[in-house]
Structures are given as structure tokens and as C-alpha cells.
Image 1 (cartoon, rainbow, N blue to C red):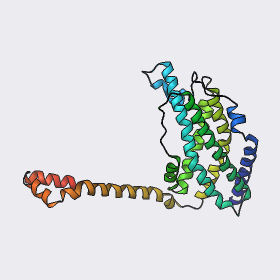
Image 2 (tube, rainbow, N blue to C red):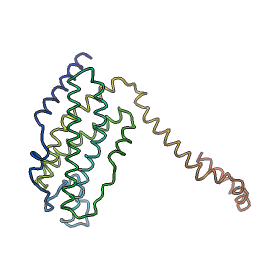
Image 3 (cartoon, rainbow, N blue to C red):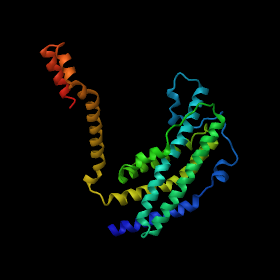
Image 4 (cartoon, helix red, strand yellow):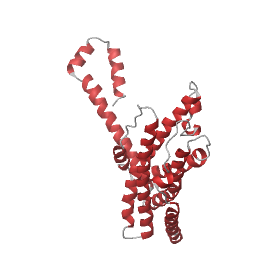
Length: 275
């Protein structure tokens, strides 16, 4: 069974390479094609922007909401692809002196993610040219990447697979089929979808490969560590801002002179729950 699975996985890596070659596209020649964004059209579909829930807005204002959210949608993908690419390059190390087909598939994955980041930077600038000033996207891609990459490889791969899969759903079920959307915006995510389809397969293959070496207790390490760190912060903050003060001799002296023994006992009981 393991041998069969290994052969199947090898073939899936190979098929990803074939698909990557087949759907390969260029930002300017294939996606942009000399076009610009038209603010008379929506960017993000109602099923994603939830524009209909903005019940106090006019149709024009709802369209503007779709444009703001569409710009953020593009920026979010540019953001997450920073840590996805870093993890893909890290994982490729496991194949350097091994399966060269798997290595090529991941190298292509990385190259495409770099192209996607460049595409989304361009889209942000192009939308900025036609929308009013004042939009801000303050999240720093490198800071987010460092935070995410600080988690276990299993967690990062599972998170990445989730992202790659909802990318597919969003395009197939919402963006691609909405005739009211900007054709340029639709094309951006059409071409993105064509390459992300292979990426989702590679995410799954790498997650399963990594998972094969883990036990249930090893998968729980991240959760246990997170709880431990959270408890440590809570204990530190309670000490800094509550206990260190209420234990001060002068505070105890003053407070004891102002309250009854029953009130003092009630206070002690309440503080005990914060230990």
C-alpha cells in the first residue's frame, strides 16, 4: 500500500508540472492586456462582499463597497502568498537530493507565487488610480509571514491548503459566474485560479508527506504551546496590574481600615480566582 501511494504521489507531482506548463501565463500579455479598471462595474461579487447586508446604502454605494473590498481581496492574497512561498521553498529542501520531479513541482509553485505577488501589487496600484484617496492596507506581509512561519509546519501547511481551496471555490462559485463584475477583475482571478489549482494539490501532497512522520501527540504540541503562552501572558498581566498592587502593605493597611471583615473576605475570594 505504501509503495502504491508513493507511486501515485510521484505521478501527482508530475501532473502538476504538466499542468503548470500548460496554463503558464504572463501578467501584461495575458491578464492586463492594456486595460484599466472601470468604476462603473463591481469588483467583488455580492456573495463575497455581502453588499446586500449594507441595507442603508444605495446601489452606487454598494458598488463602491465591492470595489473597496475587491482591492482588499487582492491585497490579502498578495499578503498570504509571502509566507506560502517561504514555506514552499523550505519544503523543497526535503527533495533536493531526492525526488527531482517533486522538487521541480515545488520550484514552479514558488516561481508562480512570486508572480502572483507581483500581480497583486500591480492590481492594488491600478485600483488606487481610479478610486478616491484614503484607502489603507497597513498589514505588513513580512511581519505576518514571520508570525505564521513561527508555527509548526503541519499548521502552516493546513492553513495554506485551506486558503488554496477557498480560492478555488470563490472563483468557481462566485467571481467567474458573475456577469456584473469588472472583466479585468474577473480575469485577474481567472488566471490566478488556473495556477492555484495545481498549488492546492501540492499543498495536500506536502501536508500528507509531513503528517506521515507525526504522532497525534506531536500534532497537539502547537495547541498546548499556545495555551501555555496565553496562560503565561495572563498570569504576568494579572501580577503586573492587580496582584502587585493589592499586596502592597500600604494598600492593605488603607483598604483594611475602610471595609468590614466580611467585605475583606469577599475581596480575598475574588482575587483568589485570578491566580
